[in-house]
Length: 553
Image (cartoon, rainbow, N blue to C red; front, side, top):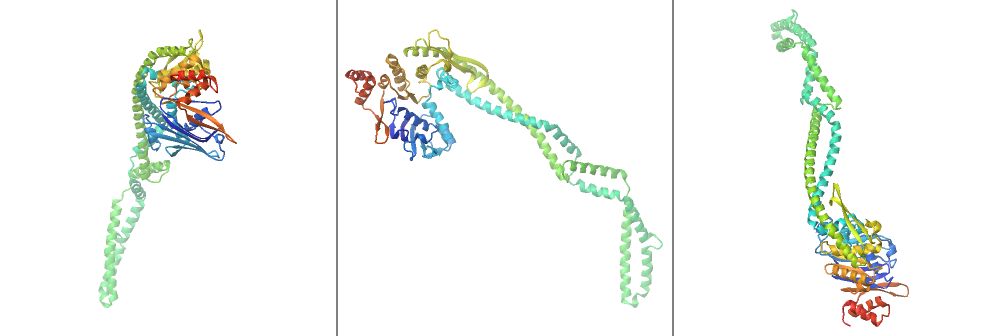
């Protein structure tokens, strides 16, 4: 409930503080004294925008601060989600600077206007649940039926599952889109992977194949050169080895004559040994090398395939081709996994949809059961407010689509006149009729819907006499379970006040200033008497006021 409201430098209010209490808080005052300005200031707390036109003094900032007791409201999750300190006493403050800059605070923590509006959306539901605009809302009309039908827990369970269903639906659409795009490329990706996979590439084969092909291409040259060299070194009659042997024999005869000749002899012997080894190697090469045109062709074709794949994929090594092959395989597997996830989510959605439809049917059945008695109760109460011919019908229409509230929708149809044709409420009801209908519906759901604070701004306009008495009784009954704040011109409603506030204005040399005060018992009698007969009130009006309040004369 609202604990207090403090206003500084707003409209014609210089400074004002009002502490509200449980039960029925009545606000009365002279026309133009600024009663509705209080609600305007509360609107700033609720996140409405404002500009410098609201400043009482143009060179000072405007401050509006309200405190609420939120002990019984489930708001901890919101505070945690937005990194705000949670306290049982919630304090919201708005500041508007002379240059038009607006700031908002929740428990002294600066917040954006968007966060404030999100928070006060819950507060508005709590404290202004029954704005006359709400009664035109199909969502609100359904909430009323659900509260009377006892659907609250069932609907909460349904909405939790519906949220899960919508999350799954969103994920499924995303996956299906991704899968459709991937499917367009899947055949080409599979072809590329198969081509690489069938190539059976080995990490280091390119270098060895290139060496082999080079060797096979030079087989004839190898044999020719090796054979020629071997023949020259060791086979011919004038072979190098034979020539050196003759030289070594000659030197052997004279090597003792000169040390240099001895050294030369030794070196020739070493050369002979080296040449014999070389000749053996050349002979081995010549005998081992075979001309194999088939192997050469196979090797060339294998290398051509490797070069073609490298060119196709714009790489220069087998290592890079193997990496591409792995990536392609991963993409193919991803598509298969995606298909599996799509099937899994689709199956989950089917189960959720089945459960939701069962729950939606229960919700609809409960609504239809209560709709007729709901309409009858409204008509009976409207009759007490001088609308004895009013008719209302809560029409439920089945749908094949799942919505956050089930699988049906509701529209209120209304007629205020005898024999009148029922029409959509928003099209046929006048402002006065809407006000009375709103009050009646409140009284019916007050015990089943969370309505911590009900705010009425001159709901009694155009109402007097017995109708005003009936309206006062309804409001008084509401105030037994809820905090109610009502701005009124009706003495009948004012007389039911548990806390009566009087808004007044006084003139200074330069300005008109609005203020508010809590009336004492005697002041209440005089105020209500003035509302009955004018100022000063007559003795009869004073007596009537006492009777309305319930005091003995």
